Image 1: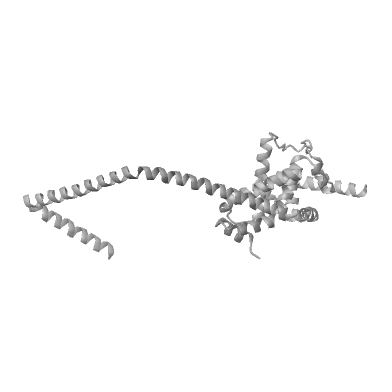
Image 2 (image 1 turned 120 degrees about the vertical axis):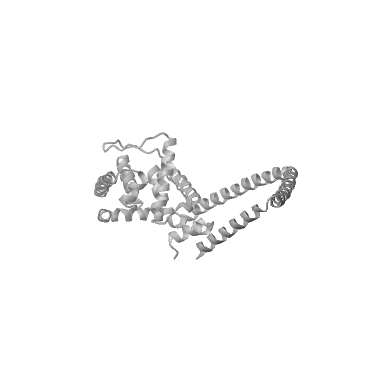
Length: 175
Length: 115
């Protein structure tokens, strides 16, 4: 099986089939990340699609390293662009309020899992850090580089977010 | 890394959720978007290129006229320079000696540099 950097180098030379293989490999991670960030399946898929279109344009700039971290960073920036259009600022405060998602009925159909509900109970900053590091598999350092937040802040949000997530999952299993 | 190992069970849960997503329609949508974008890019570039070629074609006669004029000018300048040089040497043969010394010096320097 060809490696991601190998496929990316080939895609940079204009081979669409190799880029399609990269999309196939990473679509689940990126769609999951975008869906969790937006809280909506349709908005998440729109961001995921914009992510891969941007990746195709910038594939020549991919300088090796973990492809998943590179594509997750693009996804995060696309998400921020959408948020800026909606003029919602991300609150970094530890005591930040939980920002509820606006969900349509069709989006809610697939969102009934405990995990998604547990994520919705986290603060905005914790939710973002958990999505990046726990759900999308970025290292703390990669998440810090993608978001521009300090490494210590990422670590602390992940630790607290994971604890809150576990607590919520345990209580929902007990109930 | 040690920190990340402490939540690998949660990562597995999220990954299982993501794997349930059907990749085919999404990949198809992305690749259709890419093909549409590159097609429109090619069309725009082609149209701009054709427009540029059209403008250049209209300018070609005056451009060639300019080049013909330049050609005549260069030929005339070279002829004039040759005439001046022959006049100079016939007027004073010392210039031939100066030219010879300069040429020998240049050869010597070149030979020294190559050695």
